[in-house]
Image 1 (tube, rainbow over the protein chains, first blue to last red):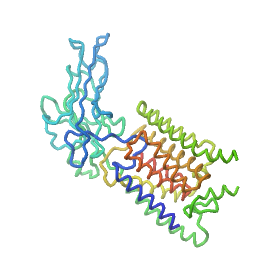
Image 2 (image 1 turned 90 degrees about the vertical axis):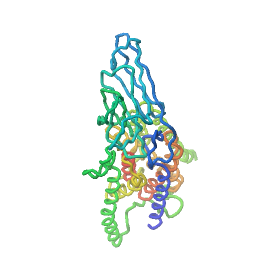
Image 3 (image 1 turned 180 degrees about the vertical axis):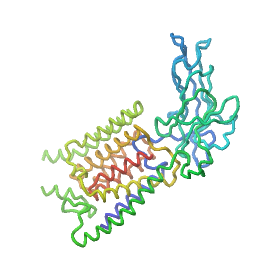
Image 4 (image 1 turned 120 degrees about the vertical axis):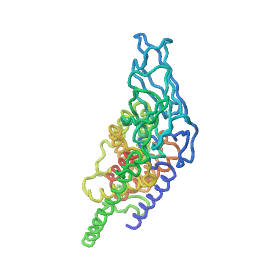
Length: 264
Length: 182
């Protein structure tokens, strides 16, 4: 039994060391995001892979007289910013083409006072005024607290307005519908760290809560279980873990099933 | 003689099939994430067709220790991320469902049917290491190389539990929760 515990403990310790070497740790099912490209890396980010990239697209007027639908993405493999437009989102221009640009901004935007952003600040601009809803999607860094909402500030000047969030279509993405273009960033209110709710830092606290509940369950459930097992062991040999053959797992090479199968 | 050779090659065939399914899922998720994820998980589950629940570590009963084991494995898998928690949002909606299908499929394929096949031929220790190696290899297309040691180590933790406790329920639960949160 001691050998088993030691083996399990060693495997767990080995995992913790290996997972600590990469952020965020165990990552499975969906691929981990590529490192976020920051214009101004926050202090917690030690290795910025490079400056963020811009995006550009043009939309033509279709035969029905409406500007084609489409999307514009920034140039990263996993685009950090994008916008999607419906048919007729723009009035038909005289030259027959609407151009759209997404630019990461290093300066010149309104100061997002009171906000902590998990993305760069991007300027979405077009050669024609938007006349229908567009969907703006931003990818945020996994190395900073997750944002709660997307905010917008007009290019002509003015403060930041909370647009909210329509949810995510993939991990580490946040999207929102907007009727105007301008500066966009995904942020949370800096004061929310110490808000009355007390549990909201950026996105949420699901992971720490699950880990805390797991520890509680192991401690509160494991102690009575161990106590019951000891009492049962005093009366009869332990049946957990079940032993299916002549060789005990952890007692040497080969497993329990191997021993039993060989006997057949 | 032929039967023995066939039994020895079965783990390799299973490992190759599981890795191929995972690689196809990874490539497919670039096009249609939900459909490819669900289909990949279902195909991994299909590898266990015909296997008795007992062989896979899924025999009913002993729910108390299994629950405690699931909680302990979940804590271990999530601890490194929880310590440096940045508040990333957990999966939502259909992504959570797909994550569950993938987690169950991977556990049944690697710690279930592949583990059992390896253990029957070469014993438990080889089954733990072999299933973890196949699990890591399966993630070679979807993960940067730097992540693979952690995936291999996670496979070892779950495999050791599977070996010592003869149980797959706890690894399935822990794997899903880890996928869901990260």
